[in-house]
Length: 257
Length: 303
Ligand SMILES: [Zn+2]
Image (cartoon, helix red, strand yellow):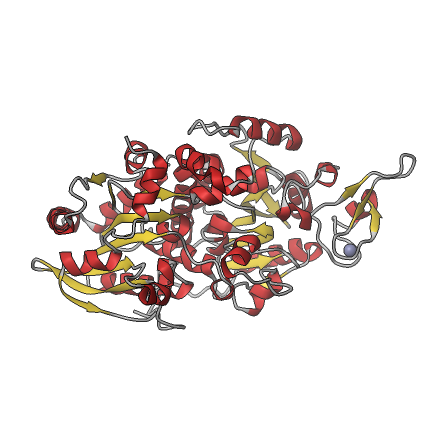
């Protein structure tokens, strides 16, 4: 039986499928769209338009990067404010063209740096939450690795939130929690247990609607195929819901906590 | 007069910016030492000056002290004072922390909600209290704030908020994180109803509170010198392995970078809030009729 901290390690695992690989393997005709139109293009968040079957979808993913050079370029998947603003720009575009949004979330958290604070990391996340709560198009988010606090939530205010079996979702990293509460980062294992951050916990709390099995997690192709199939069915359902009803349900979904 | 805030010893780094109590003389009145200029001032004199040092340093206030300072006398009616937190996750030590916070603050939670008037103008208000577990946001804090925005939307009232937060209520795990989305939804509905929300950011406003309702006001006001940011200074220093520049994440820094509308000293807050409320009163003269724009919608915003 895997402990909570085992799950944390799995979620951070080296060979785990990254956000961009979900886009590339599930969708076709992906065209990446760059930039927040305000400051820069944040490579930690990748977004664009793609096809899923006959449907055009706006896709957004946090990308931690492949090799070391790519990881550094992508800031190890910790977005800056311009990343969240790019994501929001693409989401508004999706709203304008009445197409659904699919987000793949995998981040240790929003970046903690001088520039991030100067450019309003808190404001950028706040604006995403505020806008996503009222965005007039379906949003579906899949937590595929680490779901790190507000930096993950900024892409997961959605009508459906799904989670891979070995992904985690938490208000704070176990290391951060242990060092703040017990002044001892080495007690991360205990903290992971206390925080209740596993996919099973999330399902029990009602934070996610679906946990996706990773039984054959070495077989990524199988995982991509299953997720693709689930997405196609769910997007059909979501796109059939009247906007007013969709927004009321989205509000009630988060109001319940 | 409630001096409780002045007699508490600092709980952590974030609180050091606040009170530094000393009770060195038995016969004389208790003094508070200003962390900015080092002056010792008798607490009664400080209180006369709304707990602002002569050098301009704003000492932290309890929620009740703030209400005394900004609301019309006897106009405050509290809402949902009975709501109190429980250890839902079975997190070690949480019940004990809640208990001692309740004892030391005589509050049930880190936010006080209600209605009041400012220069005769009615508003809904919530005031966060950094003395209660550093005003971290758990489910009850999130619930009270959400209810307040829903109530204000129903009653068509503006909201005046005083925010504070030293971090997440980690003991409530993911349920604490969900409060950011929950409160943001309620702020959005209030805004879509065309109603005004003034947020006054006080020391310290950080973490998930900054990344949700504190930054979602129509008007963002801050107290001079208030620490405002997303990440805590220590976390940033550990991440970038550099010392942070002087004044980093202070209210003045945020104003300079375009993230605040104004910085208003405590003495002027009531007047400025009253003026803003009056300028947004729907009964005022000269409002453009039927512009066809629903409050809260935005145009051409980068799409
Ligand atoms: Zn002073």
